[in-house]
Length: 138
Image 1 (cartoon, rainbow, N blue to C red):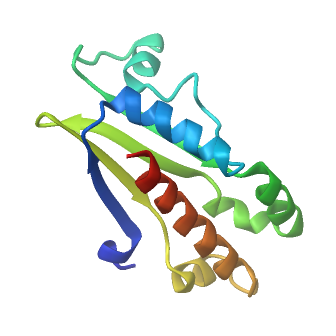
Image 2: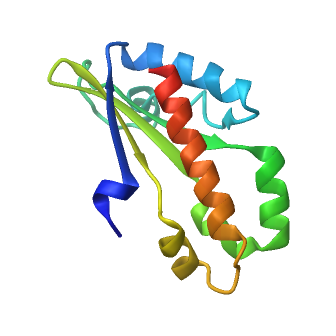
């Protein structure tokens, strides 16, 4: 795995909450959804389950999916599911809003889901689209 190739890192002048809202809107425009809109604010989620975090803790974990593509993909091969949860992380650190997104190369995908020659290219397209949606929303 190549960290420089697989880990997308960006910053935005927007707040964490503003980026999350704009990214959710951008996702909808391309038939993607943020599955966990009600639980992506990790401060609220941790506290709801007894976790203790400071008031300035600001991390959103956004689960991104394209149901009209995932349905066909997982029906064709449920082994693909290991790579299906896609998360965009947005957090504040040192006065800036940071965005992180982990994807995988076609070679990594082929290694994790062997014997499925169409999947690496298809998933690589999705990874690229999510990166472009991040860029559009920031």
